[in-house]
Image (cartoon, rainbow, N blue to C red; front, side, top):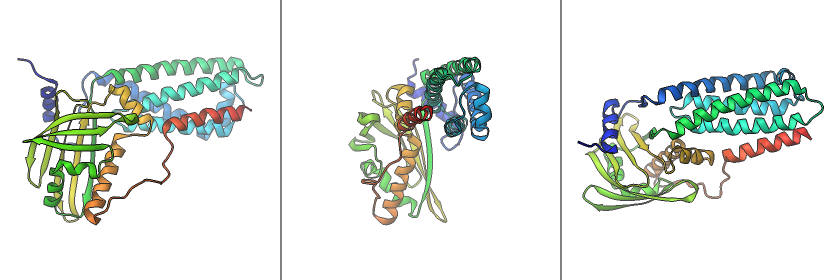
Amino acid sequence: MQTSVYDERETALGQQGRETSEQWVPPEEVGSDSLAKGLGWFSVGLGVAQVVAPEQLARLIGVQNRPFLMRLLGAREIAAGLGILMQDRPTPWLWSRVAGDAVDLTLLGIALGSEESDRTRLGVATAAVLGVTALDVISSTRLTQERAPIRVRKAITINRPADEIYRFWKDFQNLPRFMKHLESVRMTGGNRSHWTATGPAGTRVEWDAETTEDRPGQVIAWRSTEPADVENWGSVTFRDTSRGTELHVDLAYFPPGGRLGSWAAWFMGEEPGQQLQDDLRRLKQFLETGEIPTTEGQPSGPSRAGVFSRLLRTGERQRR
């Protein structure tokens, strides 16, 4: 008897339970995860050294003393390291280390052309960075190639009765009103619906879904049906409390383009956890006040691509 990917997925979810906070990790991920965590600690340690003792570190590796640039690179290392250590699936942060390695190698190459550099020490430092880069690429590639879903869990308290929020969510056609990347949901009959969403870089993805569990005022669960541009499943749980209703959302999906697609989305500033949290804040605003805040016309923060580009420009200015 053959089992589909959906059967295997539901078995895994059943083993861990929908309401737990633990992340199911396939056995093949354990080795990759150990290497990733090791790189995370290395990144934090190196970053702290760059921030605390930039002059000593510059002298150690044989480059000119540029405290501001060294501390900037150290802050990048600390951010990447903490991202790796704090995430269950740190693939984007590992790829950010690879991008950072490219920046470091570029700066070291520039330094090699300077007569003020100690080329012996600089050569040793360059060899060390190349070794670390190889480990970063290996770890990033392994996690990118593993077929494991991205899992997002978020919760929010809304000052409305659970039954009211349940009725609003049960009508899936309401979801695009507060979910920024969801274009439309169309009911197609029975417990089935058709979803259209905007993916990374403005791509459009579509899928059909079926409701797998519906307990009024308590929980709604769904999953996509084959074939789907984005295989996904999830649940939303409604819990009455003295402060209103706790809304717990649990989503899992395989991103378009696999892990590389996930990294590309993160690199351009489209982090799924933050997206969902923003969506839930809009839902809270709408249900409590009848209005949904917009960000049109407001300045947005820089993308990670822009940050790395500025790092390169800063290094070039320091050299001049």
